[in-house]
Structures are given as C-alpha cells and as structure tokens.
Length: 253
Image (cartoon, rainbow, N blue to C red):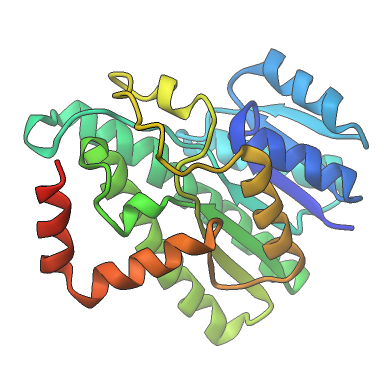
C-alpha cells in the first residue's frame, strides 16, 4: 500500500487515477480547487480517500497541501502532478497573459510540487514524483495548442533534470514522466478559447486507460511512459527526420 497525493483530482485523469488507486489498496489524497467535485470523486474512490482543496498555482498552497497530506496519511510515498489546462491559440497570436497562464498552470504547479515533496522523500529514504505531460510536448500535431505544448515541453525538461540530479545522491527517489495522447475528458471543452472539432478518426484513450498506465508505473517505477504505446513509435519517427515529418504534416492540412 502506498500513500498517493494527486493534484487535478476533481475530474478526468486525476479522478480516474484516484478511484483505481484506492480500489487497488492505496490511500489517496485528492487535491483541486473544486471541493464538491473532489468529494464526489472521494465517494467513488472509497477507502478513506482524503479531500484537500488547493490552488496548486500558488506555492504556499502546495506546501500547505504537502503538510496536510503528511498529517492525514502519516507520510507520502507518491506525488502526482496532474493539474493542467490547455489553450487554443497559435503561436503568433499568443499574448503575455496567455503564455504566463499556461506556464503557471502546467509547469510552475509541478515545480512547486516537486520542490515541496522532495525533502520529505529524502527524509523517508525514497518516494516517487509522477509528472503528467502530453504527447504534444514532443510532436507538433496540434499546433493550435501552442503555449500548452511549450509548457509541457518545459515540464519534460524539468522532470529529466530533477531525475538525474536525484539519482546521484538519492537513487530511491523515482521521477516519472507520463505522456498521454488525446484523452476523452473535459480537457477539450475547458481549454482557454475552446477547441476545434476533432476528426472522427482521431485516436483517443479513456481516462481509465491512462489512469491504469499511471498506476502500473507507480507499482513498477520507470523514467518515462507513453500511455498509448503507439505514440512512442510516432515520436521516434518525428525525431528521426523532423523536417520531413513536419513537411508531411503541413501538407495534410
């Protein structure tokens, strides 16, 4: 049994992970801004799931979340940085406010989480950070997501650097990057500026599929996973010849 903190747990991937983790015998602390929705998820999860409202874009609230979770659970084994939001606006139309908001919600929230929980993990002699990124951080399939994609790419870099730094002195602290593709949640509807209609052929996963992949990597830590293994092959193809891949993508539009 592990004690798991999940941010962005009021819906989508976070809610699905909370339910699956609790049913697998883990204890979960659920964090988000929307308290009624958190209580609904906790009721579905059962198993003593704990609700903790927090705005993880504020460092002080993340630190308070850590302290409350440690007190409620007796310690934290896994911290999942899952909170995030998208945007629909191409690069050349982004405002300062657009870009700053995407970085705060998708990157700084995770940075605060990592910085808050690592001292606790060092004291305990181990633990795991799970950062939920996106396939779009690697391959420019949805260029209208622009600043969201950039934010997730920044999260990838922070994750990798933290993993290498911790491996030197604290090899029992695992840092995992999770990259879903398109997931059938309210993410599209909640993106700033809405979302364009998707083609019926666009492959997607359910939140439960993604949550199951995250739960597996919690039970058997790895550095990085794509929740849809087919996307790993696409990413490899992209990096083999970026120019050719992008020319073909542009021609299809």
